[in-house]
Image (cartoon, rainbow, N blue to C red; front, side, top):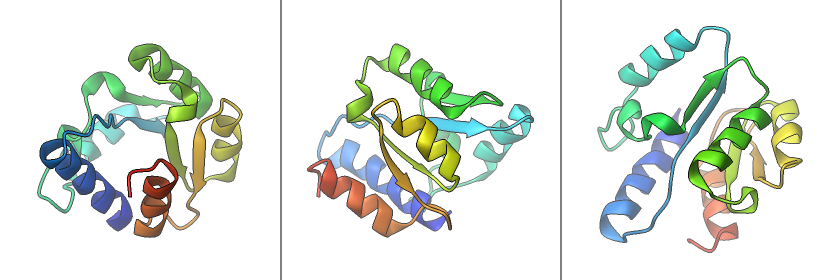
Length: 127
């Protein structure tokens, strides 16, 4: 969770200090969505913000559906083109599915890392 915590804290900082309009979403594939929502209340990112407060409620996609379906829903909700979205995941099949939509994907087999976050920032011209 260290890399994700770092990235979310950085996003919180960028929104406040630099007025960068970054939207954060969650795509989680599980057969126990209520457990996932509860975990989001318990987890706290490195700047002290509860995870559930880092993401707008309507940008949380938690279900057993393929993650490409989550991203199609997020695209409809936000209007953000797939090519302007990025996705970090530890499962290769999720990366394959979502990248087929045109989303820039980062395979993080050992979990989200600061290096993966910095690579995404660089590739999106934010570093």
